[in-house]
Image 1 (tube, chains in turn yellow, red):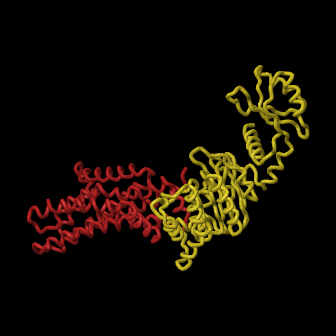
Image 2: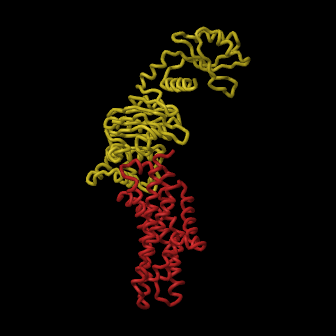
Image 3: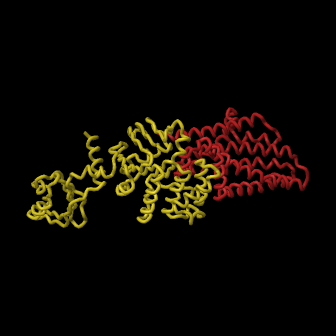
Length: 317
Length: 226
């Protein structure tokens, strides 16, 4: 459905997207994941034809976005980052305008506009000016704008940013239900969101693809690592020295210096060794007071951080 | 083109912009009608258009400065340029919408002509030629204003660039007659004499075509920003 082939985009000397390639099949819900500035929006902007890649090719449903933009763009519904909308139009006027822009046939227009307003729950506010709507509604109006014309592909750039938890759940379930009829790409820097909605994750950092996999597989990749988080009071600064004496320790990382004089650490140890008992005993002897000690559950977050760190290290070598 | 044209015209009148432009233009025209025509007991409707052209120079940016600058600032340009519509049709849609508003304002000036008929028989041909010339002038003005709006995301800059350009080209012929063809407002001067000046018409039209094309090129280039 979407083929991205060796695409590169530079802004001056800064490479925003660096030779990325991936394929998305029909009916997939794919998450584009990465820290801020990783190149997610640039990638989406190139897929939608808003920006032209410096190198490479993007093919939408058999049509190159550069060579046959009209045909390719007709297949895409795009919800840009930050939900830009025409504030002086009403909800209905806006959706009608989007339908016109997308060349929806006149006889189908009324029905189509009505349908997307129902899907996105906008019927009640259809005659309100967009400027008077709350953020949650604006998000849905933007979503309706993307949906109108029934495009095969939906591209949603950070669809849940700035919403309250209830609205986030609503938007997520909406995206999930849309995934039944459309191919969906959504970007996010929230990992839990991606693992809930998407069946496939593309992780991007510094313009490069780090991994393409299912959320489950990604979690599996880091599961073999043992991590313990702890909060300690360490007046004599002996923690490093003491920790070194424990067998199987790989790394001690300071996470946070708390205001009350305690410090948060993460200790990573070799697989299948439970170091909690030893930590407790050794620290007590060294007069390091443990306030909290917890074995860390592996999450997609860990997978993500680990993948990004690994790539950074490779890059530095 | 029609989708954009329809929406843009609607936007001009949903916001105060359309009313402010037409209102300001007509208020000033009424003043000039009194000062330049009635005051002299004259029937020469066209005389007020020299002053009207001066005013147009300063109020054109009201219509044009937001055209593309605002779309870029708010981000709605992403909706426009990712739609299947071509940039050319979007530019034409916006251009004709602004021109439509100017045209409405100009058609209202026919009221002054009608008033003159109460006192005598003004020369209708000259009046119509003047209105034609004035329309060509506003077409050229709008095309440049639109171009200025396409190069920035700041409406104020777009407006200042537009007025600045008009004023500079206005006074350039004072330095050397070489610059004569650049001065839009002096090109207009022949029309109130009742002359359908071919040379001037060609100049206005080519100026307009040039800046509409430049707008399209600027927006196309934006896609491949470096």
